[in-house]
Amino acid sequence: MTNWIRNVALFAAVATLFIATGFVQSWNVTLTIVNMALISAIMALGVNLQWGYAGLFNFGVLGFVALGGLAAVLISMPPVGDAWAVGGAGIMLGLAAGAMTILLAVWVWRCMAPGRRRGMLLLVLVAGGYALYRAIIDPATAAVEAVDPAAAGYLGGLGLPVLMSWPAGALLAGGTAWLIGKIALGLRADYLAIATLGIAEIVIAVLKNEDWLARGVANVIGVPRPVPYEVDLQRHSGFAEWTTSWGLGIVEASSVIVKLCYAGLFLAVLAILIWLAEMALKSPWGRMMRAIRDNATAAAAMGKAVRARHLQIFVLGSAVCGLAGAMMVTLDGQLTPGTYQPLRFTFLIWVMVIVGGSGNNWGAVLGGFLIWWLWVMVEPIGFALMQSATFWIADGTALKARLFESTAYMRLLTMGILLLFVLRFYPRGLIPEGR
Image (cartoon, rainbow, N blue to C red):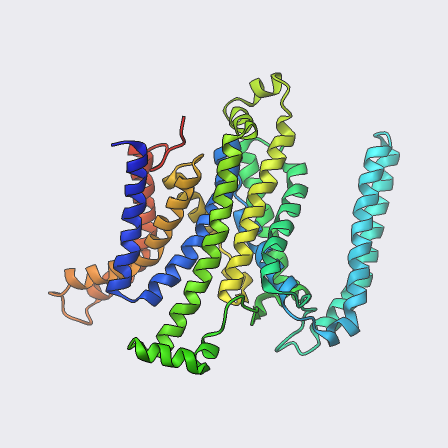
């Protein structure tokens, strides 16, 4: 069996899982899984750019995904006029003061000779700048958060079309990755993983606590959609006639149509990203990145700017993750910082890349679809299996109750077993990188 036929068979097997889900449960459920699988595949593609192309161990996927979600709110939500009136100018001025303090500190660090004078000047500059920043921004944020806190309590966004937030999410995540990379990319692989994980937690902490930015844990709901609302389809007379002629329920049909629209948008983005990634991988740039990954010392001896190329690929991969984060918030219609957990948005994405095959873009996509389907479906399948296995135990017994409680851990057990199986028998992934 050639590699091409084998790869097609793997994708066909995963597609069969989704089709079977549609027949056994419903197509509504299947499309819900498909849409999140498409977004997860894009996240896995971003991690594959960093790890598969350059060997960068980024454990901060969570933070870049959250930044993309924040961009969806800042771009698409309408501005809160009253909040801007009472504190918008103060917040902007405070942020400008903070940015100016950082720029001045960097300038002093670079331009002055090392010594006590530079240290004392930096201490005074940073302490004074921080005090000025807090003096300006604290009353402004308090005023903003007091404006209708039950429904608003933040500045809102720009009120632009939501599709514009997708590239904005990529830019915000990529820009943040550039700042992080300038500092952290000099670290060894394991220290880089720890640093990026810590930075991701800082990003989540900011989102949870800075209510003026995106309402914190109060969440932002009602993010605009790029597709019609189900209720609008249901009210349309032509759609009602069409569903009646096909013998379909109008509620379920409207939900399926909306999910198909989302799937079309997400699939188009994924196709573009795969094409760009494949073209880059086959180019001289892609060969250079793999040479740096395999032996950075030898590549540097050949005149390659290893640090600059690492920063470049770190920014590109993070931008892809930010794009996926903006798409996810658009699909959900809300930003909920409390749901950003490392297990879902870092560990699971890494499992997708490892199982699919690092260094292979199609492998990352396959892993995204397979692992997400398992993550969603293993628990209900485990519950059904437990029902069949414990039919002989009387209801209400402590043993049966404990067994059913354990089904919640089936997905974690399955991920662990699958990861061990792949690492043992397919150490390069189901679709390994081509030689």
